[in-house]
Length: 534
Image 1 (tube, helix red, strand yellow):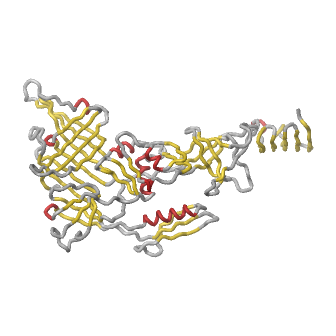
Image 2 (cartoon, rainbow, N blue to C red; image 1 turned 180 degrees about the vertical axis):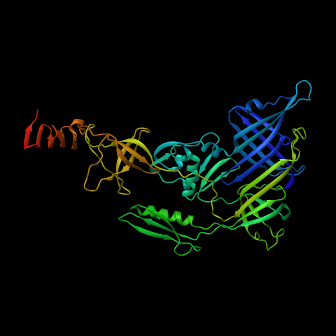
Image 3 (cartoon, rainbow, N blue to C red; image 1 turned 60 degrees about the vertical axis):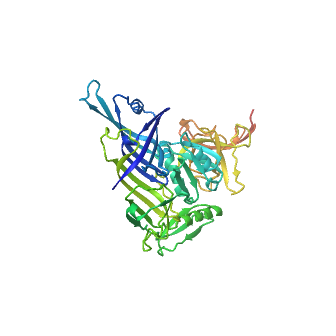
């Protein structure tokens, strides 16, 4: 712990009203900054005596509170560095009132306010559970569609993704519990991307590699209480990709130097497309790179120069021994933890002062500048599928015909149904497959058939059918079974097995316009009939 004179500026905005809290009124502040965002808390006090406490009436409402907090060392007469600055939304708050009854007339009221806050994307997206279907969009389009006030998202062209026939956000809270924030972090993790929160403009950036540090922070031995170096556990496995497709089965192994023979992490796929396997191999190869060591600095003074997330740190030779583990290495700041408690907790002391004396603790986490490891918060993995209803689409035949149509993807040669999803009024593809039946049966789904669709992130599957085709259902009293072929009432073949007076009757009847042929087998008779009906 060390003592420091700080200028802490706290600004609260509630609707159109802004409230400035001077440093002398701020009795405690805590921050935990990371590449993906931050969280923190603050405690401050206000009197309500001769000058009315303007904040109270707005603070106790449920209205959104926007926070701007800046911290820097108080150094009179010197050029001030850029402050450590954050923009946030309040997540929790409390207020405590104390009354000084010995004051005559109207007693003075001291109010102590406490707030917890977090970076804005985390606050809002953790409460965001969208369920929405997209067609012919990139994943970047889907992410940008979730942007609301106070959130700014920048996505590099290199990570915008390919245009997909469908993308489904299935984030129904009661079923799976993963928020859009979880989905976003999961997408970054599973795609081996880089996500960072830009503290300079409070925006979110998505890219394929870490930016080169711009600002440089310099630490001298006198600034540091102690240094601790952490060496991460190395990967001792190789990765195998197993393609379980019966016609294109294949095994691909990805190796790395620190592995132990015979130790694997296997990934099972099922695809006939070579480019899907190649893309997965490229992704898993990048993930298999071992993380490098990290360094934790416990400071003994607040940095005299700006020290922010992503800043470059150099341990210059004139200040540091060559035998030091940090010598001749460049580091990047990836975590800053600080707490500052005012030495004078009595609100009446230094009230409304522009700076104050604080007892501080500050830890700076660093990694080697060329470390490719991406730091992410914990997240829930989104789970699929979610089931919705759809109707089979066929462009052949008349509107009332029970026709089916196969759509072939020119690039992959895969065959699909087209299914209309009324909820979003969109048409998507679902594989043209036998489903649960063996290859003996060929009964494609026909036009307008209601189906249950299982929607996954990038694909859909027909799970089941919801209604009987017109003319297929039999009266319950027949206790019969019916197989109906054909596309409409005037062009069909019917196979019925029913019970009449407790006796089985089997009928095959072909209809083509007014011409019919029938075979019927019943008790003690077989009827063969052909005729033209009116």
